[in-house]
View: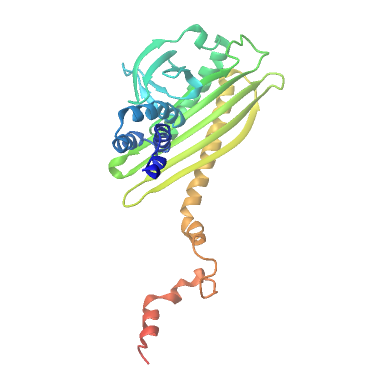
Length: 304
């Protein structure tokens, strides 16, 4: 009886384990995982405690988008637009969405206050970048959405001060009926440094995919990069910044495609022994000599 009590998992441990499973759900699959976790726990209070902590973190990490109740647009759930745990700013429409994280729905919207929005000077640059970026995302991502936030210096009234914009791009393709889900998430921090007359760009791209037809294969790839351009008028700056983002994202996607098309000749070979039991390297350049019929003929002594 004492051993059984020692091995009993505490409520706190159950919550942490449940959170781990929820937070590590593949793109677009947290609701399926949550259903199984809830059934395994058999305790609604423990599940709700874990879900209330895990869902907001998951939604922000996966940059999910939720449609407004009036279908007038979408809001990206990201820490850059977070007003509080349940309210998120959509800079394009100047609205704040109130969301239900666990149900993953937008319940209501309200107009953003002046304090929640950047100054007219910063907004000119923000709008220009978002307009140019929206055209790129519309061309590059069939189901993509983007948003541009001001994360610092939003009270700047004119040239001569620094401010920072963050570009968020999120694209997801969920097809559970075909046993596959995937997402593309990229964030680009754009720092306007007036004293240097330069705009520094730092990007972070994360790609996730899950294939689960007769198996379970996941991809979780990350990439970071840096670039810069000069400070220009808002429209010209927006074009330059979008071209930088387009260049780096296209380059990374091309490298991903190349690396995975070469998997049979690289990674899969590395999974094998470098030297088999025979202590002889496998002749990948001439595998025909190991034809099955030749081996069978030799083993059975056919033709002798």
